Amino acid sequence: MKKNRMPFLQLFLLFIAVLITSCETKPSKPNILFAILDDATYSHFGAYGCDWVNTPNFDRIAAQGILFNKAYTPNAKCAPSRSAILTGRNSWQLEEAANHWSYFPQKFKTVGEALSENGYHVGYTGKGWAPGVAGEIDGIKRQLIGKAYNNKQLTSPTSGISSIDYAENFIDFLDTKNTPEPFMFWFGSYEPHRAYEFGSGIEKGNKNLKDISKIYSFWPENDTIITDLLDYAYEIEYFDHQLGLMLEELENRSIIDNTIIIVTSDNGMPFPRIKGQEYELSNHMPLAIMWPNGIKNPGRKIDDFVSFIDFTPTLLDLAGIENSGMQPVEGKSLSNLFYAENSGIIDSSRDHVLIGKERHDIGRPEDQGYPIRGIVKGDYLFIQNFETSRWPAGNPETGYLNCDGSQTKTACLDAKANKDTFKYWAWSFAKRPEIELYNINDDPECMINLAENPSSSSIINELKKQLYAELKAQSDPRMEGKGYLFDQYQYADKSGVNFYERYMRGEKLKTGWVNASDFEEL
Image (spheres, one colour):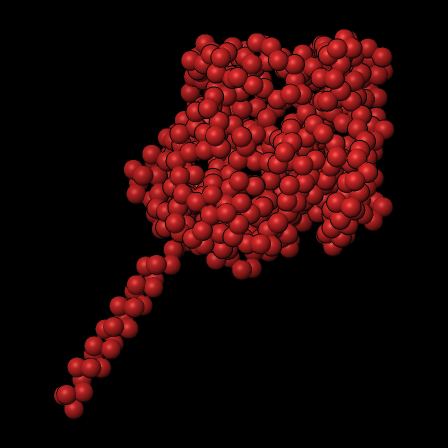
């Protein structure tokens, strides 16, 4: 009998060793650091080849993780974009939350709430889900992404940069965490949202007008606009610096290896024809993700199309939450992309994304929106504008309120008065045709509408057919002849309700996000 004990013991020990090894190779529930800029276009980061914005920490995350080349928000405006992130559902699936400044519907639990209910320490600093009213459930105020950590303040370097000390508030958050529990922290920078301190990029960011050799062709080129762009760049760099401080804190606490760090923006830059619209530069977002314990073969660049609705199922998947109590999500987990080893296209089914919008800022009669649906597939962006009689950036007489005030906006508005420069006004503010089609590989600025060419009819029909089929499957009210519902949802900032009618009656209303000169006389 003694002769048989040794092989059995050896087999038992081998089994234990294999079991331990397998446990070591499978990551435990990761911590989550979700860092989101407020209004930044994907191409203005070093990892994407920009040489006039310095983003060493974003670039580090890309180099030590994954850089996504085709990440899109479904809706290029703050609140609806963040709603999609937190629910895993497209705008048209979110009732009131499809709109900017909405009352967040009770029926939609967020991923932050689900993580909190399943053992995660959840909180945020800076801008969370906003602007809007999160509401209450059973008399308790909702915390869509946990408790706010904003007590630590600093002297900001410019008048346009928030005084919230993001990094110190992250430390406060970590200090309140019970040792064994994982965390989810949302770093919501207020940068590079407007307004900027004009000239701060040059005066405080050590930038130079010569740093930018070319600007987008839909704006007039002058030193004022370049200065505006350099101020924008400086604020992105401020975000990146704060991000770097958070990475240092994770390293100091030896918890960075099992922390998944997601860095993106909510929508494109706050400049005419970008933020609040649905063009390539509006919806195409920066995205870098690092997770030392989980991502295989770091340093990869992935060309699969991914949408913001993919974040929620990804986080639920990695946290091991099968019964979240959330409404069904439309997105797909990104985890298979993390565990792959190649660059390029990993999942051939990820060959497109859907985009769209309803009401953003007010300023049209009856608080109407500017409804759009679109699809990005392959090299093409197809857009359908449903209400072409409306002004896409808001009415002229009420200041084009869906375009933030700036030196660049002023230059484009001033261009309207001269027939030689009128095109700069038209590209950003004029009414648009029902159908637009762009080859975003050849024309990322979306300047040549291929829908005007009869030879594009087949690709238009193909993309429209797919778009409509998916929207119907997702129960988009606009596909059921009920698009009016989005305009009927009340604007949650009561001071702005019925803005157009009140303004036209002569009432003095606050519009701090635009300039007085933006309002045109009829």
